[in-house]
Every structure is written in C-alpha cells, then in structure tokens.
Image 1 (cartoon, helix red, strand yellow):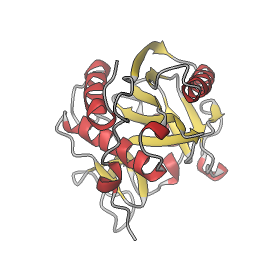
Image 2 (tube, rainbow, N blue to C red):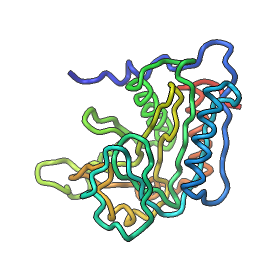
Image 3 (cartoon, one colour):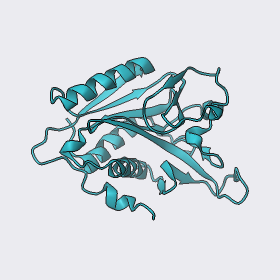
Length: 237
C-alpha cells in the first residue's frame, strides 16, 4: 500500500500559542563535528524547553556522511573526502560548498508525533521552495528525497526514465525532538557525488539548481526556504 504523502504532510503546524521557530544562518563553512555537537545540544535544550525550536542553515567543507543503514560497498572512494558517522537514518550522502544544509530541530510533541508525516512535511517544504524557481520537484514512494525529471538526459539504466535527485532528507528523533534535516543542491561540484552511491540508489543521477540552468544564489534559496517553511511548519523568528 502506498503512502499518501500529501495527506501525511498536512496539518503539521504547531499547537496554538507556540513560540516561533528560531531561524539561524551560519557564515562560511561549518565543520561537521561542530554541527553534530551543536545539534545534540540544541535538541536536548529544546526537549527541556530551555531553547526554542530551531532551523540552522549551514554549508560544510567536502565530506561524506554515513547514515545508520549505510552499506560500506556504497562508499566507492573512501579516501576522497573525510567520512563521518552521522547517526541519522539513511545511507551515504555528500555535503560540500554550494549545497545548503538545513538542520531542523523541532519538538514533534507540539505538532504531530508521526515520523512518516514529518518526512512528508519536509518533502512538501522542499517542493514548495523549488516551485518558487519554477522547478517541479517530485516525491517517489520508493525513494526518500525530491527528484527532477530529466527527459533531455540519457538514461543511466536500461528501461528507466532519467530522474536526478536535487534534495536529500535524513532525520533523527530523540524523545520526539528532530535533528539533522535536509540538503538542497544549489551549485555544488556534482563530481563529488561520484565517491559514493548517493542514498544507495543506482540508475538515477544528481542535479542542482545551477545544473538545471538557473542562476540561483544561496541567498535566493534561503529566502524561499524561510518563506515556505512558515507555510508548512508555522512562524519563524
């Protein structure tokens, strides 16, 4: 039975009277170890009601992260970049300059205690954001993330229509507080993805806003992310 993700994503706003989500944008490149430490601390503080829910936008230096389901065989070039155990769900992914990573730390007890609904809401946020740039991002029932059809590109596997991944999702929940989050490719070096099998998926490629012919800046994307986040998850500070 397929998941009706449109239904799952609906009504993910916080309870009435909840404070706005804090919106942070980091300058420069954030070391991955620092990101993990900050997320751990914030998630604990949010659970203790001593910090507001937070979205933290960062860029990382080039690196690979391994989720809890990562297959070592999917790390095809283990010496290319540093590799980190992320602790999130999912498999291998790449982070690097030109890719916006949004770490989403929300208390789902204030919203909806449904993991599938949360992932669907993240997908809805990404799709709405891409729509601001006239990109049709699509869900796939058998693969998490957001995809773009590329009929102008040759297929990467026989009998499979070409689709490229433009955004990835990998989350973790602890006592119903989320951390980790999403990544959207603005203008990363797409050859950097060649050192892994991204998210364990073969037969499809990876793309970015600039690769699709759109001269979008990181600031442009950030503005669209903030605007569309409010529509799905509620007000931001």
